[in-house]
Each structure stands twice: as C-alpha cells, then as structure tokens.
Length: 537
Image (tube, rainbow, N blue to C red; front, side):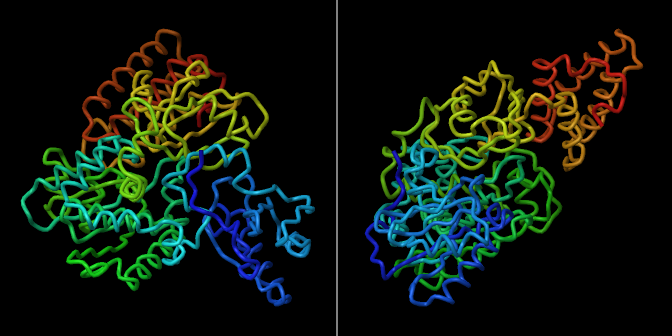
C-alpha cells in the first residue's frame, strides 16, 4: 500500500513537465548536468511547451540521475541518465507515454522497489517542487495544520500520544509524553528545537526529507508550537548539508510570505517564528543537551540530566527537542488521525520508519515501511545483496554506535524492543552493509577511535576510555604478545567497556562499547594475532 499523494496522471498535455532531482546524492551522481541538458533541449524546442522541475529524490540512488516525465498514465522514469541521453529521451514522443528508450523503466510508482513501500512521512518527497507552497498544498500539505487550529493544545498532544509516535532520532522516547511535559509547564517562553544534526554513518533520511519536502517539517514544527504553547522554533542543521540549508531557508521564506509563519498565522491568534541555525561539525551536537549548548552560542558540551530539556532547555526555558522525522510525521497524524498512524507497525513500535540502506549494497537508498520487516527482507528484497557481489558478513544498524550483527541475527524484525533484546539498537534507521572481506577487529578499533575524536571531553569514562580502548585493541591483535597477554587484554577491554557503558554521561561513551563487544563476540577470529601489527591500522 502506497500513500503517495495524487500524481499527474490526469494532467493535461499542456502541463508537460520533466523532473530531475536536486537532492545531494542525485547531484553527486550528475543530476545537475542532466538538468542543464534538459533546459537546453526545451529552450531549443519551445513547441514542446514543457518545463523542468527540480524535485527531491525518490530514494532509489542506484538509478540516479533519475529523469521522470509526466504522461497521461503518470510519471515515467528513466535512469540512470547521462546528459547525452536527454535529447533522445525527450524526442521519442515521451509525453505520449512512449517507452521505446532503453533507459525507460516504466511508471515510477509501479516499480516493485517503490510500489511496495508505505510512504507516510515521505509521501511528497520526489513528487513536488520542494519550496513551492502551492504545490505542497495541492498534494495535501497544511491539512494537518488546518485541523490543528480546531483543537486545543491538550487535544493535539493527545492525538500525538494516540499515534504511538516515538522519537526517530534514536532514543525512541514517546513524542506525546515529551510534549505533555512541556505543555504542563507554566505559561512562559517555550521553544521548539528540531535536531537536524544528522551525523550517524549511513544515515541520510533527514537530509532527504529537508531537500525533498522541507515544508512538511515547517508544518510539523508549527503544530508542535501550537501543542505546547511555543511561538519560536529553531532548526539546528549540520553544516555539512549546504543544499538542505539553502532549501530550508527558501521554504521558510515562502511559508512566511504565504502567511504560515510569523504573527497571526493564517489569520488566527497564533504566532510562530522559525529560523535555521548551523552547527560547526561536531558529532556530539546530535546529543540534545550539547545541541542546546551550541544553539546558545557555547561549546557543545553534554549537560547532566536532570533537569530535562522539556523543563529547562534552551536558555533555561521548557523546550521540545525532536528529530526531523519525528516532527515531519506529525502533519500526517493530524491530517489522518492518530489511530490511522498507529495502524502501522508492531508492538510498541508504531507507524513507519524511513530505513536507509548504505555501505556495500547493490541498491542503496531510502525505504519507508511499517515497523516489523526483517533485516533479511530489507537486505535481499530491497538491497539486492552486496554491490561487490560477494557474500554479506556483517551489518551495522543505528549508526557508528550500533552493534555489528552477524547473519544469524538478520531475521530480527525492525522493532525497538526486538533489537534491544539482542543487544542492538535501531537508532535512526541507518543500515550499513559489509561483505566477507571486512576486518571486524578494525571496525571495533574504529568505534573506539571515533569516540576518541568526537567525545566532548566532559566525562572521564568517555574521554579517557576511548583512548585506552584503541590501545587495548592494538595489544589484542599484536602478534608479538603471547596468549596470556592477549587474554589479559581481552579481559581488560571488557572491563573498560563496562566502565564506559555505565559511567559515561551520555550515549556517546555509553554506546561505544556496543560495536566493540559485538565484534568480539560474533567475529572472534578477526581478533587473533596477525603477522603484522599494522592489520587494523
């Protein structure tokens, strides 16, 4: 079942359009050159009466640059397209649903990889002009906000609670409970902060959404403001996302011009102002209290909790801090009802999860599905195995602090509790695949090294533990040590992991042991002494 908004199948020929993505991944694969060539052909043939639309990506990255043309039956996809293919594609009567060109893939939404998804949050991504307010509205945008105006703040919070939405940033804390805490605080200045510091390896869902449908995030943040009594919002965006930065600012400007931001939004008594703030490249600022410190103009250091940000957050005021996907899921909930969203998923994991397939995978990209699908189904049905054509050996889910999963765990359903039961985390839904050439001792060492570089340095277990962790792993794989020395080092590494997990101030140090322990447990042979001590370096 696909919940994409209505497409262009009934669009008259006079509204001929050609779509080429402006998503960062698509651009890295050459979509700008394709778009330039499309413009050149259309300028040379004005009788075609067609226009170029730069949209977001459909998420099928191995097919980018993807070129889509609207026809009476819907959009037809061609890919991957090079600039030199454009003239032939356009001149093969493409607007009349002709499909003779060898790069023609058929109707986009009938492609098996795409058709089987359940796109709720990403329903408009890859379909609309990302910064066009009218296009957003014509595809169901701002319906949730309109419904929100008719509800009290408590009714809005109750609707989010009913949906079962949990934070998509990784912690999976119930969003409605967080909002209730902020709502319960006495009336005062409150804030909505969007955590868009997406720094986990193998993740790009936030970026894809902000580049493909930034207005849904704007709408979600406005609804959050109405729900808790906040009139100011900030999007804390990682500086490595210049395209998202540009599109967010344009979308906000257009929404303000259309009356959806500012004072008396949509002619109501409600006010909501929204700004984008750039981070400075620190991974730790993806942790909510470090993010708040950075947003206040300070060094990104973790704060001790309590107090929770919901009670004393930005500038000491009650603050909702939610991830991009969490906030962008809210318009669907207010548009279709909390129970509709809750109908998707399993157990306590309700709704859908944008899953990102990355690493050594043949078909990398984004798949939005209800919770409950297994890793194996994802890796084979959607990922189509390793890009190297070799056997898969390990999968890391949940970013650089997630456990490495061996093949015997790939039948685990994507569900927060199911993953916790095997010592893994679902995190932000990023999946990184490794084939059988991977050195898991090197991966374990990388986890400690990553923590050493990215630690904010505030607590000793994280700051010192990561440094000692790298040293100890080097001793384990050092071929010059005898068996007793090696076993002593393994025991020391386990003790060190205990100290980091239970003594660190935040998840940075607390979760770094997850990939290290899983590599030791499931891939012990990779830690056996090697002839060269340079193995893991």
